[in-house]
Length: 426
Ligand code: C5P
Image 1: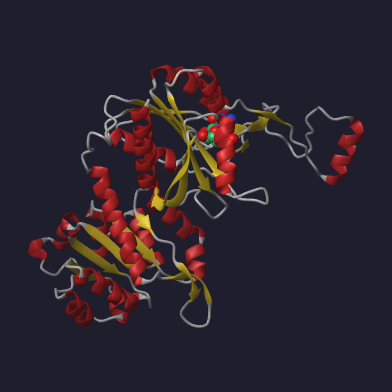
Image 2 (image 1 turned 90 degrees about the vertical axis):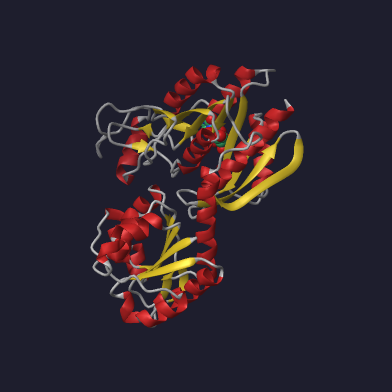
C-alpha cells in the first residue's frame, strides 16, 4: 500500500517516528510529508532514514513530477499525525499553500487525521466546527487523548499512541474496501425495497424555536448507503441532519414526527424492509404559537393565580402531548403478515433497574419488531461520533449479536447481514 504520512508542526511529531516504523515494517511504501514547522521538531534525515525514501518537502521539489497532485492521487492511505489546529482548519476549508495541504485536496483514498494540540485549541469553537466539517465529509478524525501536554498543563489534546493510530488507519482502509466490494450473493440486497428513517425530528414551539435531539443522522445514512451499495432500492425519510444526500438513494426530508409518520405510511406499501433509525420525538408541544413567544407572553391553559406566581418566578410551563409511535403503528398495521420486516433502534442507558441489554429486551417485547438495534448512549457516547457499540436483538432467540466499537458503516453492514439472515428464514 502507498501511504502518505503527513506530519504537522507539534511536539508530538516525535511520536510519528514510531508510527512511521509500524507502517514501514509492515511492508508499506511510506512517503513522509512534513510541514515546515514539523521539520523544526524532527529533521528530514530521521524521516528519510526511517522510511527508506526521500522526504517530500515542498511543491517546488521535483516539479516535473507534479508532486502536489501525484502524491495525493496515488496514495492508498493518508495519515496526518500530529494534525495541528492550523492543519485541521486548512483541511476543512480546502486551503492548499504547502505540499501536505495539496495532498489532502487531491487524495481520494481514506484520510485519517490524528490531532494533537493544547486543550484550549482543541475545544475552541473554530476547531470543533472544523472537525465536524471534516467528519461530515468522510474524513476520519481521531479524538486526542487526555493527559500531560507540553509543559505543566494537562487535559485532552495528546496524540493517541502510535499503535492506536495505526489500528484506526487500517480500519479506515478496510471500511473503504468493504464499501467498494462487490456484494456476494448472500450479502446482496438486490431486488429488495428498503425504507430507512434517519435524523432527529424537530417539534416547533413557535416560528423560531423547536424541541429537538442530538441525533446526527449518521447511522441512518450509513444504513441507506450500505443498502444502496448492496443493490437495494433505497428510500430515506430524513428528519434533521446536516449531512448531504447519500448518492443512489431517494431522499425525502421531513421535520416533525407526524410528517415522518405520513411519509413512512405513504411509502410502506412499497417496502420489503423498514429500518427506523430516526430519533423520533415522543412528545410535541401541545400548542404551536403562530408568532414568536415573547418573554412576557403566557399562553392560556393556566388559572390567573398560577400565572401570577409563575410570572413572579419567571417560570414557564410547557404542555406536551404524545406523538404517534410510528414503529408501533407499522407493527400493528402489519398484523399477522411477515412483510415488511421491521427494524427498530433503541438508544438506551443502564440504570438501577437494569443494564442496556435488559432495557433493550423489554423494548423489543413492547415494540414487537423483528430486530432491535440497541446502542448505549450518554452525552459523550454515540451521538455524532463515528464509532459505536450496538447489540442486535431478535424476538425468537436470547442470543445477542454485539458489534463494535465499529464505524457506523460497519454497524450498518452487520444490520443488513442480520436482515438478510432473517429474510432467509421466512
Ligand atoms: O421507544 P423508543 O423511542 O426508544 O423507540 C425507538 C424506536 O422507535 C426507534 O426505532 C424509533 O425510530 C422508533 N420511534 C417511532 N416513533 C416514535 C418514537 C420512536 O417510530 N414516536
